[in-house]
Structures are given as C-alpha cells and as structure tokens.
Figure 1 (cartoon, helix red, strand yellow):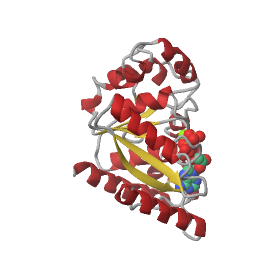
Figure 2 (spheres, protein in one colour; figure 1 turned 120 degrees about the vertical axis):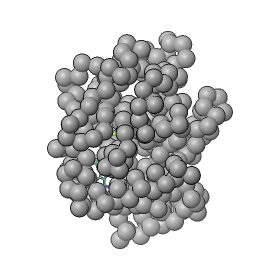
Figure 3 (cartoon, rainbow, N blue to C red; figure 1 turned 180 degrees about the horizontal axis):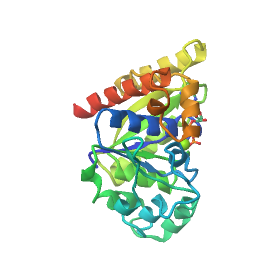
Length: 255
Ligand SMILES: Nc1ncnc2c1ncn2[C@@H]1O[C@H](COP(=O)(O)OP(=O)(O)OP(=O)(O)O)[C@@H](O)[C@H]1O
Ligand SMILES: [Mg+2]
C-alpha cells in the first residue's frame, strides 16, 4: 500500500478528478511511473485522460469484481506518460454486487497487489460519496488526498470523511493516513475563501498543502481535449500550480 493514494471528498464538484488527473500528469513529468485508477462511475477522469467511455472492453468494474486482472485493464497512452485504469457507468453495479462478496472492502487492495511494484505512485479518483467504492479505495491506500473548495460548507462534510478514515484505519488498514488537504479553485480576492483557508490551517496545520490551486479556465478546458493541463497549456497558472503540488507531494512522501 506504500504508494497508493485515494483522492477523495464526498462533497461533489470540489476538484477531485481535476486533482487526480493533473497530479498524475505532473508526477509523470517528474519521470515518475504513475497509474491513475478511475473509481467513479461518472468516468470523468477516464474522459479527461482521453479514453472513450463507451468503447471500454474492460474497466475498473472488472478489476473490483475479480473478472479481470488489473494488468489486463491498464490503458497505456503514448501522448502523455501515465497509465490509466478507466471506467464507465458499469461501475455503478459494483456497489450492489459487492455487498454479496466476501472481503468486499478489500477487493481493490487485493487486485492491485500484483501491479503495485510497477509504479512509483498510484492515484485513485473516488466518487462523491462515502460508498463501498470509496471504502475500497481507502482500504487499498497508504494516504488520502482531500481536495477542498474553500467555501462556506467546505468544512461540514470533512468531519464525516475524517471519521471514515479513522474507522478504516482501526478496522482494516492501520497505516492509513491523511497525506494532505489541497485547496482548489481558489480565488484570493474572495474574502470567504481566505477565511475558510485560515480555518483549514488552524485545524489541520501542516496537513494543508502549501501549494494552492487557483481557479483557472485552462484547468476546466483541458478535459474536453482529453489531456491534462501540462499537455494543454504548460505555462498556465493551473499547470504551474499542479506542478508545484507534485513537488510538494513528492517531498512529503520521501520524509
Ligand atoms: N482549479 C480549477 N479552476 C477552474 N475550474 C476547475 C478547477 N478545478 C476544477 N474545475 C472544474 O470544476 C468542475 C468540478 O471539478 P472536478 O470534476 O474535478 O470535481 P470532482 O470533485 O471530481 O467532481 P465530482 O464530485 O462530480 O466527481 C469541473 O468542471 C472542472 O473542470
Ligand atoms: Mg470527479
């Protein structure tokens, strides 16, 4: 589990997928071997990586249900240098089907075991819920990366997420930890954003990444081209911010 990270927050639209795709790409820019796993039936990360959802032969659904080996589901891209386990709406069924399975929260962990050594980092994009899918990601992971949009309700859901992390730690994955909180879509001119940001630092101190992801239109445009922002517009503020986040993440993970 040493190199697997769940990017999660049950609040929707806070920048989980944008962070997973662009952190993966930025780590790959640093010559790291990276695998992105799309564990959200919406398949936004899949699309954002330029993989067609409609034509998938196999997906993260098959990996979770034990119907395919993880190695056989990996899509390798030539145009940018990280690998992807894609998904689509089929994954919705896994939620229910897993309920009848033994070790249902351990499915992903067990499935990733054989390929873990092939990568420096494996990043999992989670759905906006504390579901069986998210539990599978947490049980498989070393760390949790939590994207936060600095708005009024940002802190509300955080305590139930942290409680879930604590529960998984006690019951299934003793070494699980929060790697860091990432402030996303940040607008420094917004007073409330600054206030929430200060609250985050007061509560979570060093767990808050210094690198702040600004609101940047290039980050919103890149997925429609099926590429990460470093490939779309390398000198954009969004790209520079995710490169900085990757450097900070690598430093943290070394110590
Ligand atoms: N820093 C940013 N600047 C501008 N737009 C952004 C930024 N981050 C994310 N977005 C846009 O905001 C929307 C939500 O982002 P994203 O899909 O990454 O959130 P999410 O947490 O994965 O959502 P969901 O909960 O539905 O999975 C997307 O349209 C995305 O392009
Ligand atoms: Mg998403």
